[in-house]
Image 1 (cartoon, rainbow, N blue to C red):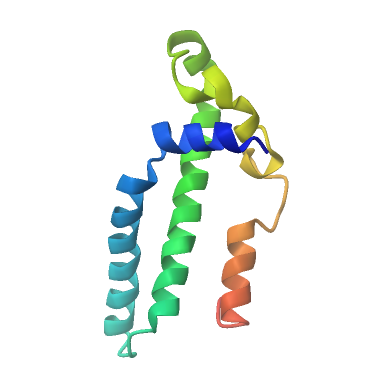
Image 2: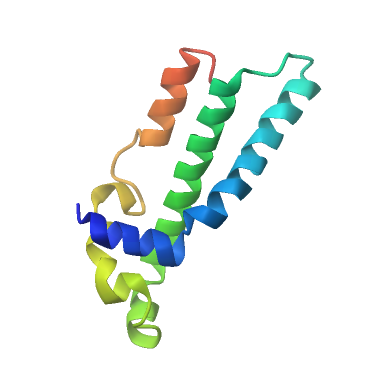
Length: 120
């Protein structure tokens, strides 16, 4: 994978400096409300960190799928964006394709591994 292209894409279309704090608040609030509503104690920092990582992966995949969906329009009308300009190989990976060819995506495997039967 071309890390320079991925870094360019991250900087221009998925800026971590702005996205990470928002996803941190979003995932922490979801975990805290779920625990409070269910009458359970709050999880440790590991649970909040796992929630942040999973939220980041889901939002990044959603952003990448949207870029892939709009690729032809961006090539035609917005060639200055990073995907038509330089980063198309980043989104041409099988993990970024929609519909996914892998019936068990990485996020599902990660949740299943953390839950060990508690999910589903």
